[in-house]
Image 1 (cartoon, one colour):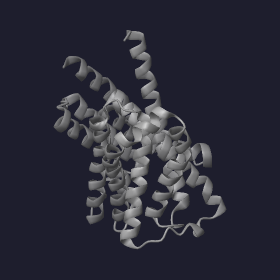
Image 2 (image 1 turned 90 degrees about the vertical axis):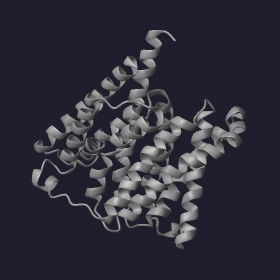
Image 3 (image 1 turned 180 degrees about the vertical axis):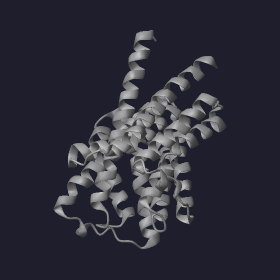
Length: 305
C-alpha cells in the first residue's frame, strides 16, 4: 500500500475515532434527559432494538452482508456480551455510588486496555506510555471535578465502584474481542449481529429481573433522545469502533476516552450555553495532549518492534 494511502487511511481512522468519542459524549446528555423515565436496562434494550431496526435494510438488501450473518453471529454474541456486561455493571454500581465516581473510574479504561493488549497481543507498555496514561487520567479527572483539587482528593470508593471497575474491564475486553475475533468478514454484518446480541442479552436480563419494558412511560419529547442513543451512540459508534479498532488497534482507539469529559463540556456549551469555567482549561489541555501523545508513542512502539 503506498505511503500516502496509508497516511490518509490513518488520518481518516483518527478522525472517525474523534467523531465516535463525540457521539459517546453526546450520549451522556441524552441519557441524563431520560434518567428516571424507564428502567436503565429497558432503555439500553431500546437502544439496541432501534439500532437493529435502522440497520436492517442495509444488511438484508445486500447479499454479501446478509450471507455473512450466519458465520459472524457466534463471534458477535461474544463481543456483545462484553458490551452488555459493561452496561449491567454500570447500572448495578449506580445503586450505591455516584455518576461522578463512575465517570472518574471510566478514565482508567485506556490503561486497562493497554494492559490487556500486553497480555493478549504482547504489546509492550513503555515508560512514555505510562506517563501519557497518567497525564490523561489527571486531565480527565481535572475536567470531571472542575479543577477542584480538594474534591479530587476526597474521592472515596465503595462496593458500587468495584462493580463499575469490573465494567471498565469488560469495556476494554469489548475492544480486545473485536480485534481478536474479526478475521476479515463483512464488518457491517458483524456490527449488525453485535447489536442483535446486545438486544438478546438485555432481553434476558429484563426477563431474569422481572422488569417490564414500560414503553408507555416514554414521553413524546423523549423519542429524540432515544433515537440519538440508538443511531449515533449505539449504531454509528459501534460501526466506527469496530472499523477503527481493526485499523488502529485497541490501545490507540481507547486513548480517546480521555477526551470524553472535555467533549461533554463542549457540547453543554454549544447546545445549552453552559459556560466552561477557566479552572477547567488545564484539564482539557492535559487530556488532549495525553490523547495525541499516546497516538505518537504507540506508533513509535510499533515501528521499533
